[in-house]
Image (cartoon, rainbow, N blue to C red; front, side, top):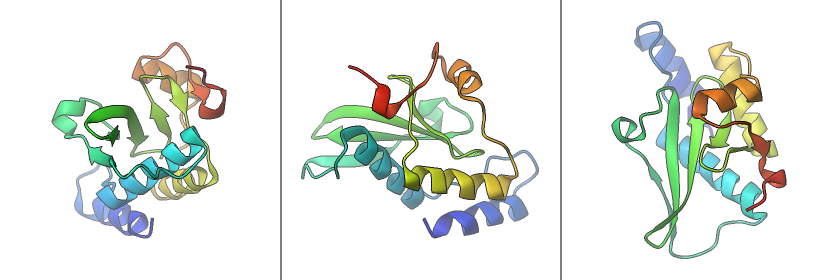
Length: 140
């Protein structure tokens, strides 16, 4: 995730105040891979799998980069990454992710944006969940 610090720094320097920080696609895909590793407890290996960044106009989630995980043509998971705090959730399953790589990513983002983590209950409310649970505790 070497491009993250540079991208956020540039977005702060060149964009008007209040404009969303830029999260490079490569970093979003790296985070999505970390999510799948945490969720599946293994590296995603299916040769038919891929990640796709959702157009922000389609995603309709201001402040988030949305990455879909597919196996073949079937969408398996939507991954929402908060560009201000680095928090990562799946709003359809109402789960959040906390692997070491995701925690490191969150820290990088918050160090650059100078914002605190959104409490999980408030974040749940923002994304339309009654509550958020850790990925490891989620039951199908």
